[in-house]
Image 1 (cartoon, rainbow, N blue to C red):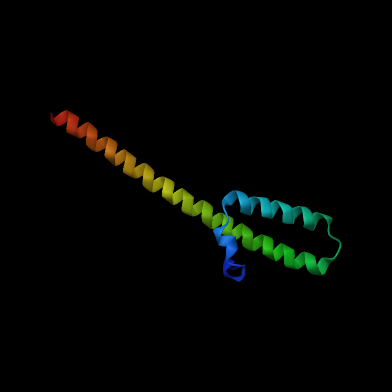
Image 2 (cartoon, rainbow, N blue to C red; image 1 turned 180 degrees about the vertical axis):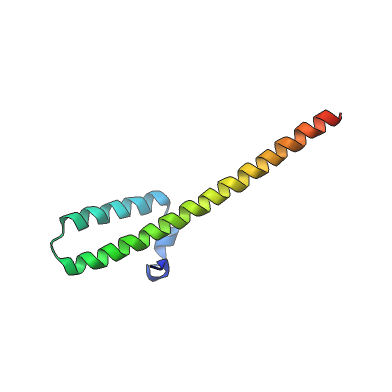
Length: 84
């Protein structure tokens, strides 16, 4: 499922907002009797889940990059102190 089929505003939502929306959709699916509309909501839920996963991956990469930069900076400072 591609997240491109969802409205553009889903990509601008925060992880918390997307999670809240997904939880709300799950509750609606659990209480719904009409199978036809359940399928559409379930597909939307899968799309939102894909967006959430991508945001987690992106955040994970950003954290890893920042951590590497911090480690490098600390290492350079320690090496500079050893030289003096």
